[in-house]
Length: 143
Image 1 (cartoon, rainbow, N blue to C red):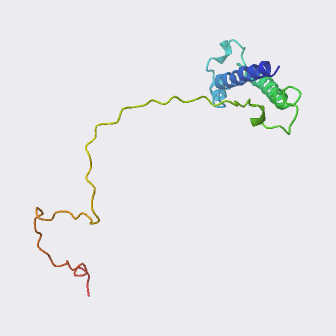
Image 2: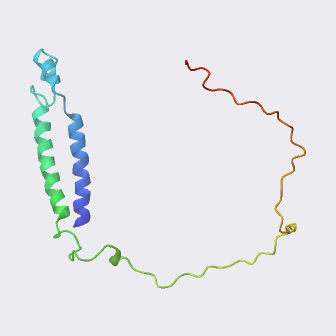
Image 3: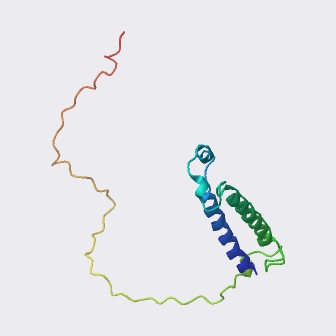
């Protein structure tokens, strides 16, 4: 029952969207007053405005009633409001075993161990930079 009402809800929603998109705006009536050729339409001299308006109202009423039915506990299969959604999910008791793959040891070079001294970088190959006096940043300001 719930699935049928849900499908009906989607169809009515799409039908309402289609009807709203087919309706003319309020400015279109002004052109009809000056003879814009709306007298030869399928729905008569008044056009399809009243038909589309009534059809939209009927579909909107059905959409509203269907929404209330979908949310009612009569249609839903869940009758106990105290139960949680997570309680309805089955729990697996067995954990699947993970296979381990034994890999041969990698051929990595040995790293020499450092003694208690800390390594210092070599500064012999760095160029010497002459020390420049700090630029006076306040010289641009008026005194």
